[in-house]
Length: 183
Ligand SMILES: Cc1cc2nc3c(=O)[nH]c(=O)nc-3n(C[C@H](O)[C@H](O)[C@H](O)COP(=O)(O)O)c2cc1C
Image (cartoon, rainbow, N blue to C red; front, side, top):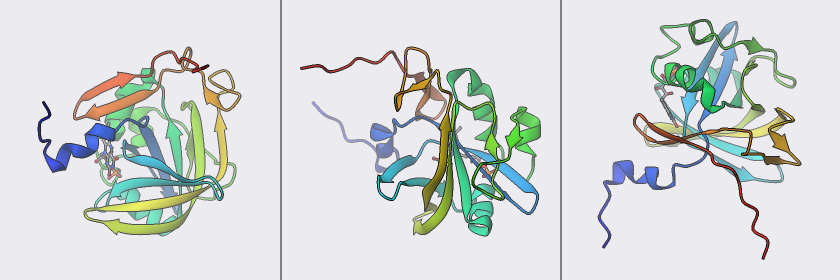
C-alpha cells in the first residue's frame, strides 16, 4: 500500500543530498545560511543549483554580489548548522555567533568560505530563476576544495567523513560507510 504525501512535503522524499552552508558577502556584510535544497546541474561547465527563499538575507547578498560559496559541514558541526538555519543574518552576525571562521575564497572577491567545513565550492552566479517563493540560483564552480583525508580520489570516504542529511524539520541522519558495487 502507498499513501498520498502532502505536496508541500513531497520534496522530502528526495531531499537527501548533504546539508550545506551557503556563505555570501557584499560590501563588508557577510552571511551563512543552512540549505538542504541543492543539486548538481551540469558537468561541463560545472554548474550547481541552490534553492533559497526570496526573503532570505543570503538571497539578497547573492543577488547583489553574483557569487556564493557552498560549504559542506560534518556531523560534529550540527549545532552550528542549526543556528545558521534558524536566524536571519539581517539580525545577527552568524559568523560571530556560530564561531565559524570566514576565510578569503580563492576565486571570489566578496563571498567568504568557511574554514571549519570539510569542503567548499566557490561559485559565480550565472542564472537566477524565480521558482514560487524561492530563487533557484545557478552557480558555476570557479574553485573547489576538500579535506584530503576525507575526499579521496574524488569520492567522499564515508568511513571517515560523517556528512549531515536532512529528513525535514528537526530530523537528521549521518552518512554511513560506503560499499563498492563490483559485479
Ligand atoms: C536543516 C535546514 C535546512 C534548510 N534548508 C533550506 C533550503 O534549502 N532553502 C532555504 O531557502 N532555506 C533553508 N533553510 C532555512 C534557512 O537556513 C533559514 O531560514 C535561515 O535563517 C535564513 O537565513 P538568512 O536570512 O540569513 O539568509 C534550512 C534550515 C535548516 C535548519
